[in-house]
Image (cartoon, rainbow, N blue to C red; front, side, top):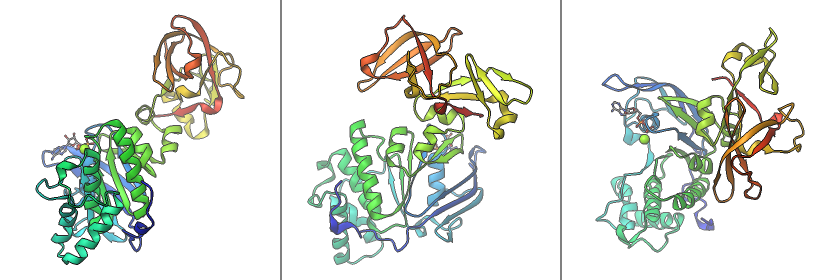
Length: 370
Ligand SMILES: Nc1ncnc2c1ncn2[C@@H]1O[C@H](COP(=O)(O)OP(=O)(O)O)[C@@H](O)[C@H]1O
Ligand SMILES: [Mg+2]
């Protein structure tokens, strides 16, 4: 969305609210532990995404934040206010859910005005606000349209507009684009990010889609089995995942289990023709280390590296190649049977069945210990 000047102050929170979640635990009545000790801080005005596979606890954390379910232990603060014991309606939160459809019997303007009506806004104030919101979501002339006249993406924009109408202090979104196709998700994702930036609202967004999380987020909390495994910027998560799970969940990852230890003080570790020093902090964990190298960092038959991780290029056989449009993904196999993914330019794809060699920069190798 391009930014019309008039809407820069639409949400204008005096000060965007931060979120502080402190050692939150949640056990469901049936005894299932939905959240293990969970802590998270989202500074005011930031876009935070909860990313994880289905069943990892994302919705549970979002619902606890909203006040829809009560945690068993721990505290939640919005800004300086401890809201742990406050009911949902007093937390002043805007919601958008995948299945939280618009009211089909109301037109677009009535849908957006609905929460304002609940809060007893006057008709004049409601109308002015609906106009602002329609501009904000770039559907200035859609007020009188029925819901059925809108595309899926437009409906979702109206749902976001409706959530923002009452000037909430936080915006929570649970897989709001789950029902849309990929292209539309990318477009709406960019629109949503733009809208969040212009309103300056603090947002928490739930998705299982890594690409969506990358497009939208200031920071991503990667969840698995009711826990946040890592909370960091998209770049940091991609380049320095701290666990095999995070490495695999965010993009293609080659994880090479470390095979041997060199020397008694475990100062270095080895894989085939590679030796690698272990940073002091990880030296006690040599047994559980893996080396991560991303497919796009691996080079074929090349001496282009400045500081090759491998003392000799590794001889491998090309098993198969996958054409992905803008790039190719090649699976190669080492003599001892390890499969490694290599991303390459579509113009220099080796043939399946041929022998090639690979290497990569030392700086492209990350040590992972869990
Ligand atoms: N009311 C409930 N009672 C018992 N278990 C629940 C309840 N709600 C969710 N769960 C379980 O908690 C886990 C996390 O669910 P959820 O937060 O919805 O995951 P996600 O949103 O990441 O897909 C799942 O295993 C789910 O079955
Ligand atoms: Mg969910």
